[in-house]
Length: 290
Image 1 (cartoon, one colour):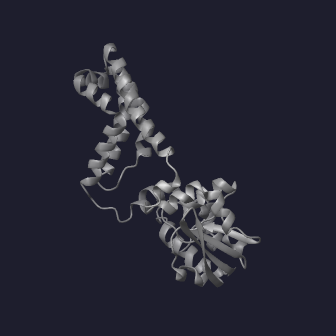
Image 2 (cartoon, helix red, strand yellow):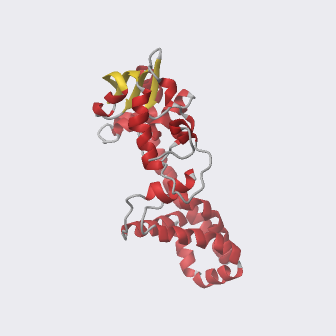
Image 3 (tube, rainbow, N blue to C red):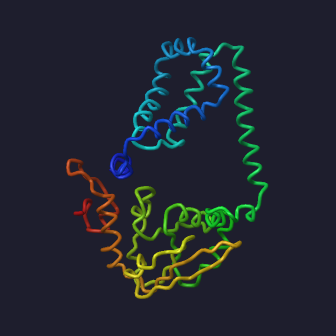
């Protein structure tokens, strides 16, 4: 039910109708198709309709999911990764629909579109960190490019390193070669900690939570015997670590894990409950009272 809770309930909380969202979805579909495909598809739309009728199963594999996402787009933004899985089948339909003489021009047009993006990416790679210093997201750029150097400054003997969210945690984990937990409630995305991390093992330990912005210390003081804010600098970007000594697991369980349960594990009563590692650690059952 983790998948159902995430995709049906948790990730859609607060979503509202907006015409901007389906507009962006249409632009996404057109962008992924490329201008060359759109041009030739418009010229040969009759052949396209005939191909859809002739290859109904292949057409369903394309039109049903993209149509479903289209309906969903009236409420929430549909990401690129949702639709990419179905594009190979769309291009198979295109190849069946277009006359033989059109296939080569379409292929050249798509190649040109790809090369424009490749040149843009090459241009980005030709820059250095100093080029981006005036951008508001510069600390996050440094985090991705100087990860090892940042971690070397923060780590210390006997200290457990954590992040404040899933994205930085995954970046740090990739560099360290080991999983890195996220401290705090987080959001509906990437609840991997709930499945594999037992925070009880950190009872009494010193933890440093790495952040690229200035933290609100009151978010951390209830869960440690003492806290301190450490400031570091890497390539001109400031980053921080909340150092908490004497981790208080019972307080964290009551203040953070209980809130996670309330927000993300309110499994509807009509759904049968299977194994839930998070709930088992929290209350010893597969469903905890909110």
